[in-house]
Amino acid sequence: MLFFILISLVIIQRLIEVAVAKRNEKRMLAQGAYEVGASHYPFMVAMHVCFFISLIAEVLVFERGLSPLFPVFLLLFIFVQLLRMWCLTSLGSFWNTKIIILPDANVVKSGPYTFMRHPNYVVVCVEIVLLPLMFQAYFTAIAFTLLNLAMLSVRIPTEEKALREVTNYEDKFKKKISAS
Image 1 (cartoon, rainbow, N blue to C red):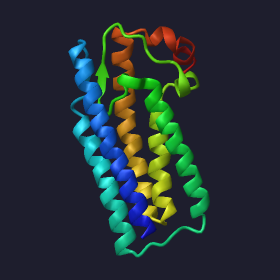
Image 2 (cartoon, helix red, strand yellow; image 1 turned 30 degrees about the horizontal axis):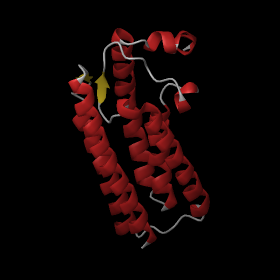
Image 3 (cartoon, rainbow, N blue to C red; image 1 turned 135 degrees about the vertical axis):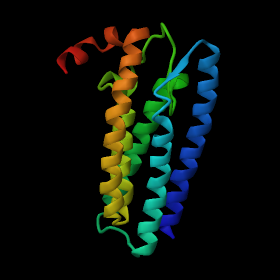
Image 4 (cartoon, one colour; image 1 turned 180 degrees about the horizontal axis):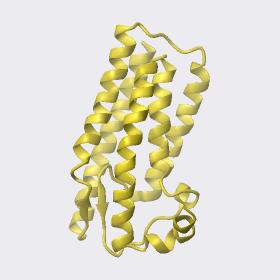
């Protein structure tokens, strides 16, 4: 029962985020923004949908129960959700599930973006590990962590290249880029 409540809440959260992303996309496109990385986006969406299918199937088919560390994992998950909200509110109308680039925009370097370039991707990576571990769904945790890392190895360079080309990204993150 707890599994279905938690998974339902996370899925509802994701659906709300997709609606917010669509609204932000529409606003930004009206301001002259454009999308990059469109070719990998359907694969990313499919990966996230398959993550939930895999998690639900693994828990049901293999009758996975709560992890002995469930309270710790749940607290970490709640903390990560707060970090997610901080990321989204810091980006405001720039936040999106797609890579939408607004030429000449001032890149956000406040909130968690003060400390790192891609905190929202860190959040997603941690969620993909924590949620299955709460219910001892180890296959899902490992498989989708690897798939997500592969996806990010394409997505992050695509996003950074586009931002460097038409925004002040390089100036905002100069020290971090040159140190990399």
